[in-house]
Image (cartoon, rainbow, N blue to C red; front, side, top):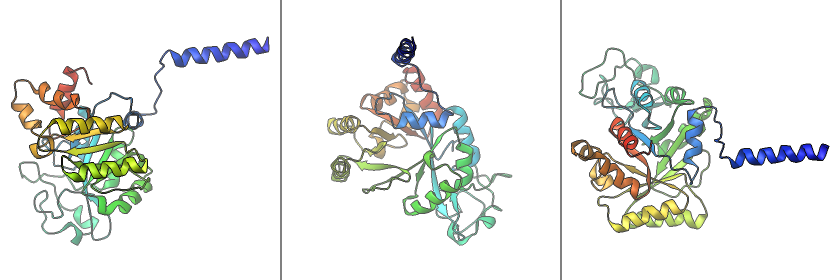
Length: 297
Protein backbone atom coordinates (compact mmCIF):
# COMPACT_ATOMS: atom_id res chain seq x y z
CA UNK A 1 0.00 0.00 0.00
CA UNK A 2 2.82 2.36 0.92
CA UNK A 3 4.58 1.70 -2.39
CA UNK A 4 1.33 2.36 -4.24
CA UNK A 5 0.89 5.74 -2.48
CA UNK A 6 4.45 6.79 -3.36
CA UNK A 7 3.91 5.69 -6.95
CA UNK A 8 0.72 7.72 -7.18
CA UNK A 9 2.48 10.79 -5.75
CA UNK A 10 5.29 10.51 -8.28
CA UNK A 11 2.77 10.12 -11.09
CA UNK A 12 0.95 13.23 -9.92
CA UNK A 13 4.18 15.23 -10.00
CA UNK A 14 4.98 14.00 -13.50
CA UNK A 15 1.51 15.00 -14.68
CA UNK A 16 1.85 18.40 -13.01
CA UNK A 17 5.11 19.26 -14.76
CA UNK A 18 4.12 17.71 -18.07
CA UNK A 19 1.01 19.90 -18.15
CA UNK A 20 3.23 22.96 -18.63
CA UNK A 21 2.76 24.54 -15.23
CA UNK A 22 4.39 27.98 -15.33
CA UNK A 23 7.13 28.59 -12.76
CA UNK A 24 6.27 30.94 -9.92
CA UNK A 25 8.43 34.04 -9.36
CA UNK A 26 8.70 36.23 -6.30
CA UNK A 27 8.45 39.42 -8.38
CA UNK A 28 8.65 40.84 -11.89
CA UNK A 29 12.41 41.35 -11.86
CA UNK A 30 12.94 37.71 -10.96
CA UNK A 31 10.79 36.66 -13.91
CA UNK A 32 12.61 39.01 -16.27
CA UNK A 33 15.96 37.63 -15.15
CA UNK A 34 14.77 34.08 -15.80
CA UNK A 35 13.48 35.07 -19.26
CA UNK A 36 16.76 36.82 -20.08
CA UNK A 37 18.81 33.74 -19.29
CA UNK A 38 16.46 31.28 -21.02
CA UNK A 39 17.54 30.74 -24.66
CA UNK A 40 14.17 29.15 -25.41
CA UNK A 41 12.21 32.20 -24.21
CA UNK A 42 10.42 34.22 -26.90
CA UNK A 43 9.90 37.22 -24.63
CA UNK A 44 10.92 40.54 -26.20
CA UNK A 45 12.54 42.99 -23.79
CA UNK A 46 12.02 46.73 -24.03
CA UNK A 47 15.00 48.74 -22.76
CA UNK A 48 14.41 52.44 -22.14
CA UNK A 49 17.43 54.49 -23.25
CA UNK A 50 18.25 56.86 -20.36
CA UNK A 51 14.80 55.89 -19.03
CA UNK A 52 11.77 57.99 -20.07
CA UNK A 53 13.80 61.05 -21.01
CA UNK A 54 11.16 62.52 -23.32
CA UNK A 55 8.93 63.27 -20.33
CA UNK A 56 11.40 63.62 -17.46
CA UNK A 57 15.07 64.55 -17.02
CA UNK A 58 17.19 61.71 -18.38
CA UNK A 59 18.64 59.26 -15.84
CA UNK A 60 16.39 60.67 -13.10
CA UNK A 61 14.36 58.63 -10.62
CA UNK A 62 11.22 60.15 -12.11
CA UNK A 63 12.21 59.00 -15.60
CA UNK A 64 12.91 55.50 -14.25
CA UNK A 65 9.55 55.33 -12.47
CA UNK A 66 7.72 56.50 -15.60
CA UNK A 67 9.47 53.92 -17.79
CA UNK A 68 8.66 51.09 -15.40
CA UNK A 69 5.04 52.22 -15.16
CA UNK A 70 4.66 52.08 -18.96
CA UNK A 71 5.98 48.50 -18.99
CA UNK A 72 9.72 48.76 -19.73
CA UNK A 73 11.80 45.77 -18.67
CA UNK A 74 15.32 47.23 -18.59
CA UNK A 75 16.50 50.75 -17.82
CA UNK A 76 19.63 51.88 -19.66
CA UNK A 77 21.40 54.26 -17.29
CA UNK A 78 24.73 56.06 -17.24
CA UNK A 79 27.00 56.48 -14.23
CA UNK A 80 29.66 58.98 -13.20
CA UNK A 81 31.90 59.24 -10.13
CA UNK A 82 31.81 62.10 -7.63
CA UNK A 83 34.81 63.57 -5.84
CA UNK A 84 34.01 61.44 -2.78
CA UNK A 85 33.79 58.22 -4.87
CA UNK A 86 30.01 57.94 -5.06
CA UNK A 87 28.23 56.80 -8.22
CA UNK A 88 25.53 59.09 -9.59
CA UNK A 89 23.41 58.81 -12.72
CA UNK A 90 24.61 61.05 -15.53
CA UNK A 91 25.38 60.55 -19.20
CA UNK A 92 27.77 63.51 -19.24
CA UNK A 93 30.97 63.95 -17.26
CA UNK A 94 29.94 67.58 -16.77
CA UNK A 95 26.90 69.19 -15.16
CA UNK A 96 26.06 71.98 -17.60
CA UNK A 97 23.61 70.26 -19.99
CA UNK A 98 21.37 68.49 -17.48
CA UNK A 99 21.56 70.60 -14.29
CA UNK A 100 21.83 74.21 -13.12
CA UNK A 101 25.43 73.45 -12.10
CA UNK A 102 28.68 73.85 -13.99
CA UNK A 103 31.90 71.91 -14.36
CA UNK A 104 32.91 68.31 -13.85
CA UNK A 105 30.92 65.88 -11.70
CA UNK A 106 34.23 64.55 -10.39
CA UNK A 107 34.94 67.96 -8.80
CA UNK A 108 31.88 67.77 -6.54
CA UNK A 109 30.90 65.67 -3.55
CA UNK A 110 27.57 63.86 -3.52
CA UNK A 111 26.23 66.27 -0.92
CA UNK A 112 27.12 69.21 -3.16
CA UNK A 113 25.54 67.60 -6.21
CA UNK A 114 22.31 66.95 -4.32
CA UNK A 115 21.88 70.73 -4.00
CA UNK A 116 21.64 71.12 -7.77
CA UNK A 117 18.44 70.93 -9.81
CA UNK A 118 17.93 68.79 -12.91
CA UNK A 119 16.80 70.21 -16.23
CA UNK A 120 13.81 69.05 -18.26
CA UNK A 121 14.54 67.60 -21.75
CA UNK A 122 13.88 71.06 -23.25
CA UNK A 123 16.41 72.68 -20.92
CA UNK A 124 14.14 74.34 -18.35
CA UNK A 125 15.35 73.89 -14.76
CA UNK A 126 13.01 71.83 -12.57
CA UNK A 127 11.77 72.94 -9.19
CA UNK A 128 12.84 69.99 -7.07
CA UNK A 129 14.21 67.11 -9.16
CA UNK A 130 17.71 66.04 -8.11
CA UNK A 131 20.59 63.93 -9.38
CA UNK A 132 20.08 60.28 -8.41
CA UNK A 133 22.64 57.81 -7.13
CA UNK A 134 23.03 54.31 -8.53
CA UNK A 135 21.92 52.91 -5.18
CA UNK A 136 18.69 54.92 -5.33
CA UNK A 137 18.02 53.66 -8.84
CA UNK A 138 18.64 50.06 -7.81
CA UNK A 139 16.26 50.34 -4.87
CA UNK A 140 13.59 51.86 -7.11
CA UNK A 141 13.96 48.99 -9.59
CA UNK A 142 14.03 46.27 -6.93
CA UNK A 143 11.55 43.55 -7.85
CA UNK A 144 10.36 45.54 -10.87
CA UNK A 145 12.97 45.90 -13.62
CA UNK A 146 16.58 45.28 -14.63
CA UNK A 147 19.29 47.92 -15.14
CA UNK A 148 21.85 48.18 -17.93
CA UNK A 149 24.82 50.35 -17.02
CA UNK A 150 26.39 52.37 -19.83
CA UNK A 151 29.46 54.61 -19.58
CA UNK A 152 30.44 52.45 -16.66
CA UNK A 153 32.94 49.80 -17.66
CA UNK A 154 35.84 51.70 -16.09
CA UNK A 155 33.76 51.85 -12.91
CA UNK A 156 32.98 48.12 -12.78
CA UNK A 157 34.32 47.64 -9.25
CA UNK A 158 32.43 50.66 -7.94
CA UNK A 159 29.20 49.48 -9.60
CA UNK A 160 29.76 46.07 -8.04
CA UNK A 161 30.37 47.74 -4.66
CA UNK A 162 27.15 49.76 -4.72
CA UNK A 163 25.04 46.89 -6.04
CA UNK A 164 26.47 44.60 -3.37
CA UNK A 165 25.75 47.09 -0.60
CA UNK A 166 22.05 47.12 -1.46
CA UNK A 167 21.97 43.39 -2.30
CA UNK A 168 20.86 43.87 -5.90
CA UNK A 169 23.76 42.64 -8.07
CA UNK A 170 21.41 40.39 -10.06
CA UNK A 171 19.63 43.41 -11.54
CA UNK A 172 22.66 44.79 -13.37
CA UNK A 173 23.88 44.21 -16.93
CA UNK A 174 27.25 45.74 -17.84
CA UNK A 175 28.50 46.07 -21.41
CA UNK A 176 31.75 46.63 -23.27
CA UNK A 177 33.67 46.06 -26.48
CA UNK A 178 36.34 43.70 -25.10
CA UNK A 179 36.50 40.11 -23.87
CA UNK A 180 35.58 39.91 -20.19
CA UNK A 181 35.46 36.83 -18.00
CA UNK A 182 34.09 38.30 -14.77
CA UNK A 183 31.04 36.66 -13.29
CA UNK A 184 30.04 39.05 -10.48
CA UNK A 185 27.70 40.99 -12.80
CA UNK A 186 26.02 40.08 -16.08
CA UNK A 187 28.01 41.27 -19.08
CA UNK A 188 26.86 41.99 -22.64
CA UNK A 189 29.59 42.27 -25.29
CA UNK A 190 29.02 44.97 -27.90
CA UNK A 191 29.71 43.81 -31.47
CA UNK A 192 30.14 46.09 -34.46
CA UNK A 193 29.25 44.34 -37.71
CA UNK A 194 30.32 43.77 -40.40
CA UNK A 195 33.51 45.19 -38.85
CA UNK A 196 36.02 42.53 -37.84
CA UNK A 197 35.76 43.53 -34.18
CA UNK A 198 32.32 41.99 -33.93
CA UNK A 199 33.22 38.61 -35.38
CA UNK A 200 36.50 38.41 -33.48
CA UNK A 201 34.90 39.16 -30.11
CA UNK A 202 32.02 36.76 -30.73
CA UNK A 203 34.45 33.97 -31.60
CA UNK A 204 36.47 34.66 -28.46
CA UNK A 205 33.41 33.93 -26.37
CA UNK A 206 32.56 30.81 -28.35
CA UNK A 207 36.10 29.46 -28.01
CA UNK A 208 36.06 30.13 -24.26
CA UNK A 209 32.73 28.35 -23.88
CA UNK A 210 31.14 31.46 -22.36
CA UNK A 211 27.52 32.23 -23.29
CA UNK A 212 26.59 35.83 -22.37
CA UNK A 213 22.90 36.51 -21.75
CA UNK A 214 22.93 38.86 -24.74
CA UNK A 215 25.08 40.63 -27.31
CA UNK A 216 24.45 44.16 -28.49
CA UNK A 217 25.05 44.38 -32.23
CA UNK A 218 25.71 47.69 -33.96
CA UNK A 219 25.35 48.07 -37.74
CA UNK A 220 24.70 50.90 -40.18
CA UNK A 221 23.06 48.70 -42.83
CA UNK A 222 20.93 45.61 -42.36
CA UNK A 223 22.58 43.30 -44.90
CA UNK A 224 22.13 39.53 -45.30
CA UNK A 225 25.53 39.17 -43.64
CA UNK A 226 24.38 41.07 -40.56
CA UNK A 227 21.15 39.11 -40.42
CA UNK A 228 23.00 35.81 -40.63
CA UNK A 229 25.33 36.90 -37.85
CA UNK A 230 22.33 37.74 -35.64
CA UNK A 231 20.92 34.29 -36.22
CA UNK A 232 24.29 32.74 -35.26
CA UNK A 233 24.16 34.64 -31.98
CA UNK A 234 20.68 33.29 -31.24
CA UNK A 235 21.81 29.76 -32.16
CA UNK A 236 24.70 30.10 -29.69
CA UNK A 237 22.23 30.56 -26.83
CA UNK A 238 22.39 34.35 -26.41
CA UNK A 239 19.91 37.10 -27.14
CA UNK A 240 20.40 39.80 -29.76
CA UNK A 241 20.06 43.38 -28.54
CA UNK A 242 19.65 46.29 -30.97
CA UNK A 243 19.48 49.99 -30.14
CA UNK A 244 16.79 51.72 -32.21
CA UNK A 245 17.82 55.29 -31.42
CA UNK A 246 19.65 56.20 -34.66
CA UNK A 247 20.63 54.75 -38.02
CA UNK A 248 24.31 54.23 -37.21
CA UNK A 249 23.28 51.64 -34.62
CA UNK A 250 20.36 49.90 -36.34
CA UNK A 251 20.74 50.29 -40.09
CA UNK A 252 17.86 52.74 -40.32
CA UNK A 253 15.28 50.64 -38.46
CA UNK A 254 14.99 53.33 -35.82
CA UNK A 255 12.42 55.01 -33.60
CA UNK A 256 12.08 58.21 -35.60
CA UNK A 257 11.57 56.31 -38.84
CA UNK A 258 8.94 54.19 -37.12
CA UNK A 259 7.23 57.28 -35.67
CA UNK A 260 7.03 58.90 -39.11
CA UNK A 261 6.00 55.69 -40.85
CA UNK A 262 2.45 54.67 -41.64
CA UNK A 263 3.45 51.16 -40.55
CA UNK A 264 5.78 51.30 -37.51
CA UNK A 265 5.22 47.60 -36.90
CA UNK A 266 7.06 46.86 -40.13
CA UNK A 267 10.15 48.66 -38.80
CA UNK A 268 10.31 46.88 -35.47
CA UNK A 269 9.01 43.63 -36.94
CA UNK A 270 12.00 43.52 -39.29
CA UNK A 271 14.36 43.51 -36.31
CA UNK A 272 12.33 40.79 -34.61
CA UNK A 273 12.49 38.71 -37.79
CA UNK A 274 16.29 38.78 -37.74
CA UNK A 275 16.27 37.40 -34.20
CA UNK A 276 16.41 40.55 -32.08
CA UNK A 277 14.67 40.14 -28.72
CA UNK A 278 15.97 43.21 -26.84
CA UNK A 279 15.04 46.62 -28.23
CA UNK A 280 16.77 49.62 -26.66
CA UNK A 281 14.65 52.62 -27.55
CA UNK A 282 14.13 56.36 -27.14
CA UNK A 283 10.38 55.81 -27.63
CA UNK A 284 9.45 52.96 -25.27
CA UNK A 285 5.68 53.55 -25.37
CA UNK A 286 5.79 53.34 -29.18
CA UNK A 287 7.78 50.09 -29.11
CA UNK A 288 5.51 48.49 -26.50
CA UNK A 289 2.41 49.38 -28.53
CA UNK A 290 3.98 47.90 -31.65
CA UNK A 291 4.95 44.69 -29.85
CA UNK A 292 1.39 44.36 -28.59
CA UNK A 293 0.00 44.67 -32.13
CA UNK A 294 2.55 42.14 -33.36
CA UNK A 295 1.45 39.67 -30.67
CA UNK A 296 4.89 39.75 -29.00
CA UNK A 297 3.85 41.42 -25.76
